[in-house]
Length: 111
Image (tube, rainbow, N blue to C red; front, side):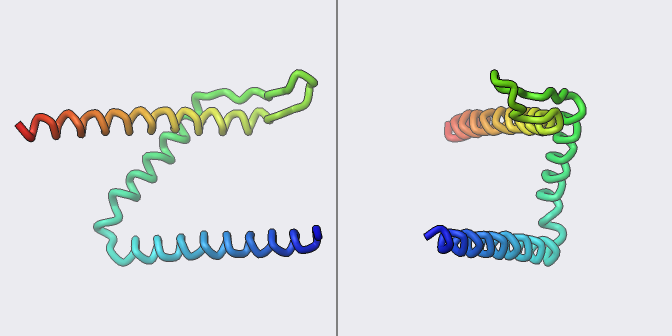
């Protein structure tokens, strides 16, 4: 029975990588077909990369151990997780602020 499970897992991996490959292919195909319309998303991705590098530089990575002394996360893993969480908090706050701004501005435009 476990042998069939292995085949299904490999099949799932293959489908996953084909889907990721097709996603990247069509995204890049669309991006390079009209360069002017793809500048804003490219700037946004570049901004996220800059934010990640900034937060990675200001956070510190500390090894995380369980109460039994087992290493749960190395210092490098902790460093990346801290930077990722900081970016998530900033993006979440920006999303909330954008939603509030949109609601308030649309309320004043209707009057």
